[in-house]
Image (cartoon, rainbow, N blue to C red; front, side):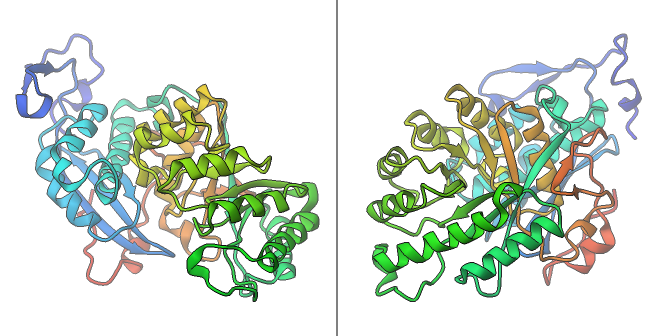
Length: 412
């Protein structure tokens, strides 16, 4: 523990003000106020889950270590290694300033979108864990407090025969009755037997009928026991997406996700405005600047940012704030380990328009073993009151499931 850590909350403590460089802020400023803590290191370890999770740890001279997570992607650990000189020696409590500093310093790597934003996201989540521990508050308090004590989780479901409507309905019923979830999602970009040329994105009438049959069979089986969403993974043309959305309007669809490719926002807007089926979009967009256009153009009914990909906790909060101005709910996409899942829980607790958080690892038997605490219970996550993110890595499980060639974190 550093010599000043125990005095952080002492209003009578005196500290030497440290100048911020022009390179860091663009102007000369100062910081102090009894927050004399420095970042000493940033480390990553990739875990081989159902996706390769990039765990990030930020170390400080106060002996406080924060854990975060970046969305999987080639080159993310290398990018984080490149960012270390820009944060070592800095105050971990200056989360916004450090985030903007990294965006500026990494602009040559493409910090508008893509894996650079993802890498920054991992550091940003870890900074919230550090800050919460130093200030002795849960991470949601750093975001303005909470609206709810627990977050709803929707389970992304799969079967060995994803194209079989009855198999999907059987799995839906099992996940609801045996695992306790009241919110589910199934894929609709599955083979139907009617395809001629999937590259042209056009859905033939038989394909439409098959997908509508999946929707009908699943929703009729679970009825009011669960909400059910359906994911298209950006597969169809605008015209086909409108026909599909129209075909399932009579069923109780929670939302239809990503029916068209993400690049053309005008097509997305056209699809959304031509159906009463709720349309969810957002996981393939980065930062509030990109998702703002979807929301302001009313091209989305439910916005679905992926927190460890989109820019981190505060960036997700900014997206939710814009969405709230248009009365759009937020359902966070999530294929992460417990770390980013809990970070999303804190954000979900702190925003009024939170709908649910995705869980993509129900078939992975050791997902929750990655941390010492319980995470999901009966389809919900209780918002932790522990400082920071509220989770403790189980280092034995991390080491057991590391990607080949990775190195375990240094001891805290």
